Length: 479
Image (cartoon, rainbow, N blue to C red; front, side):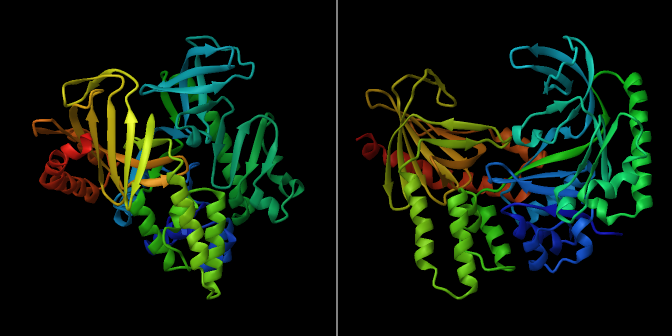
């Protein structure tokens, strides 16, 4: 059996390529750097891929596109190495073709909102389509959806093979990789000349790895598939997935995952501590990392250069505006209203003020404007403690938030909330909240078995030591 082929791009590419190669996968369409580091043969340069891995826009992890049948294997592989990686699979199929229904039209923004099944609503940019509410419409989920976190739709349907993509409309497009190798339109004329009138074609990078007969056969098969699509549209109910695309895996790499990826990368090339963390901070820090690691190859002393990186991290702490509280489903909640931050060795003490009323879950106490929240964060811990005080200084209660170790980013502290909280009442009673959310995340594969068990160990640690510590220190925190 031929190995599964994977294309990897971005700041995690060396470490992830190493992991996939060690597990028997074949890296294809590599960058020049990856080609040299892994001694990848020339044949792989234009081979089609089964799995596509690339950075999230925020560099906090990666997106993975693959067929649905590969999702479980990829999840098991990643969790084998990265026990704290958070893996969500989006409910829609990227490049999938749906029979949807128009639910609303925003003429000001020039968009229609299309339901595609399972409660999913996608956004369709209108280009003079004569649509009205209630119309059925054939749409495809565009690849740009990976950056928006929701289905972005198009009526310009494209069918992808391993070597080409055909679509309704005129035009011939060539991948940048082919262009860079000198492929021009005239080289491709024999292939697009066989297309029926009204069809365009995109030549993928993998085109160069196939024979002429393979490409002609694929084009013919895609044309027949397109014709079959027209028939299935008539016979399928609304909200049907007519042609499946790729599953989109949204993978987050918390603090521990980045450290493991550093260690894996270090087996391939010189790598500083916190390499992937600093590469994710921004272009300036990324360039400094590159300079340091190039100097390491030459045996140059890099201590002063590394100090520059550490200085930038310390500087970020003074500019923190909010906590970026990332839920297990990827949703982000920004906790702001920070009034002060005190830095004590490896500990941050953050004072926030409550700006809206409501109630505190688990404490059965009203939340009032002006309440004070004192949050203590110790770097490296898998939890932090928030103590709540009324406007007149009365202790209301406390929450221990279970989360991945906090990381400092420009303007924010970032962590992944691991669903579970422990609330502590003034009389010493406590309650563990939202364990069912953690159970569901484990059952659905969002968290690994090792992380699930680790979180329960953290809960035990909090019960045995942190609860008493919170209550014993009340006197000092009030003042």
